[in-house]
Image 1 (tube, rainbow, N blue to C red):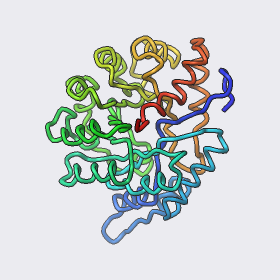
Image 2 (tube, one colour):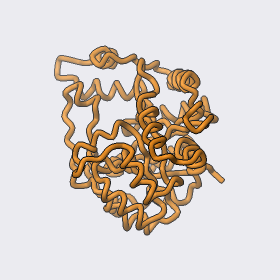
Image 3 (tube, rainbow, N blue to C red):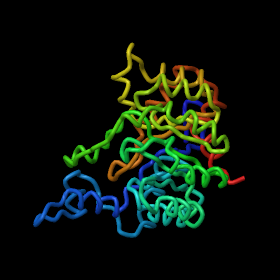
Length: 310
């Protein structure tokens, strides 16, 4: 892609793979006795496209979109527990363009078995944890088998959503979001990251409101990375006020260029890849006068190195 630093191979570290099963799960939650709701009705309510039932076809839709936007590569996230096969199909269809992440609820009785299958059989490389959503501490002993899977599988990362968690699609559908923010502080990861130095932990959205804490964490442990995705609307909680350039400046000071991963937080069609996020982040980094080498690292090279099996 042509950027202010010349041509860069863009790798997006944060794209949601909203499969047909994802919308079917939302439909189940929206249904009431005697009033069933379908996935088709859900997408019509949202004004979004209903994805094809064949996951490889949805993957092709994304690859065509990435080509149109001149994006070289993307990490696609299965965005509901139990949907790891959807991104597994996508990776199998386009292994050179797509890496697969999956959401796991570690409190589920089959969590470790599912995680092992997703990584070892389906070839997925991102284990996604949402502590506030599923109400667990990342320090809980029950997560240790999951961390060991990541530690013993090269190119596997543990993605941990900390900070404010607001799922826009649930809000639009007026579905309850019974999240518990008491599990959302990035400092919870400190001892975990120390105990598992082989594991690369990725925190999205600059910590989503816990910016100070995520900077402290990154300063103390070298195996935590930041993903820059979304509009980062959490800045409204920051005192004093801060803009995107200032966020990047402080993140660079602590994490360096080598531990920042560009992400768009793209998710649905017909919008497709969220170019506005890319342009906003490019402008913020251009304001900081970062080098072309650092731009290449943040916008693509870091993710490719992180997910390398070698």
